[in-house]
Picture 1 (tube, rainbow, N blue to C red):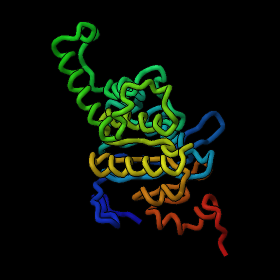
Picture 2 (cartoon, rainbow, N blue to C red; picture 1 turned 180 degrees about the horizontal axis):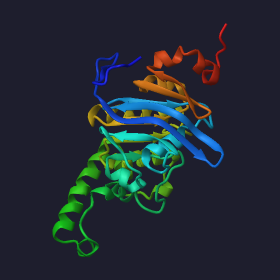
Picture 3 (cartoon, rainbow, N blue to C red; picture 1 turned 180 degrees about the vertical axis):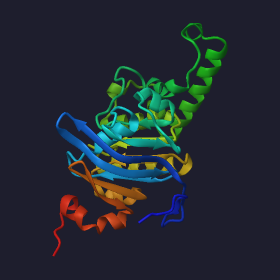
Picture 4 (tube, rainbow, N blue to C red; picture 1 turned 90 degrees about the vertical axis):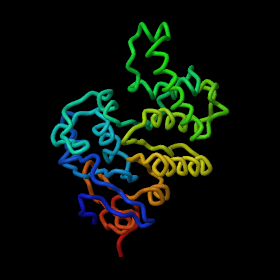
Length: 272
């Protein structure tokens, strides 16, 4: 298990930094239902951190706590070394946390380009009047944002559909556009909620490649929820496992794969 607070070196020689985000004793209740029960784990700079578990384990609830959609009933969230106060999702986004959703949340009637541009909203600071007239700071700001968005579009290889309304796209491309929108925000921490859900094998291979490239070329820290264990084991540096709102495993893919509690609860292989 990992002990160093200064980071670690992966099996393929990548250097992972110190703690970027830490969840300390997080509990989340909805009335009498405990969705998350006293869970602690951290996410380190530059790593790909997977959160896995059976349906109903509390994974999406945990992602919603990280992104500010839910406020924990108990426990604390630390980001870049400081305790994070209760915040709204847009405030968390301004801190450098972006996400995709389990169910695609795009503007179907807008083009790919316009959808990806919405990822830059946290970087737009000019007033409504100057934006409407498109002069001065507003013009310079939009041109800068447009340039960054075009780079993301090129990076994710969706140039040929940039002017296409999202509603006309097949499912796999919609998922890539949603990734582009999140990446356009230039996040320090990128949260991916089941990025491979509903994809065929070829689409999963493409998405896996892009996730690795985002982590490698942009240095973006990634936390993801995913049910495909082949994808999780191939992509992740570390894995935290949840079951009925509790943490039952935490470590490298190999450590988690050999954890009997994880095997019994999730991987479905009985112990002789």
